[in-house]
Length: 141
Image (tube, rainbow, N blue to C red; front, side, top):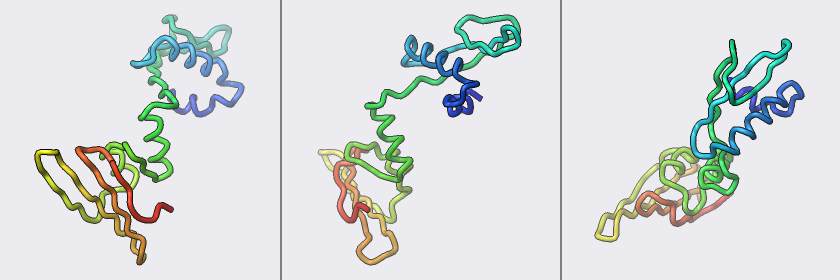
């Protein structure tokens, strides 16, 4: 429910909720914040204090725009990968590779992930070291 209203922040009817979310985030950047939806004179009001008949809202923390999580989320949404991306996020973005060549040694685990795109010349190679994407080879479009 909170997510639906957050997406509608552009609408005038939810401006109070948007301000409430910003207020909550400013004080609680690392954990879920609590807030309440109350009725005052028949109109919704969002506040941090409980009220009689109010509904408790758990608001997830905002992602800092320059955080890894924000960057990975944006890349996944566009089906892109980037150097430094975690293995789990590469899979979320591109899916599982067609083939994996793996080397294990005292230096750690090095893998070559092969993505066969179905067209001649469309094979892409990703190089993953200890769970982190370190290199990309092949067409990028």
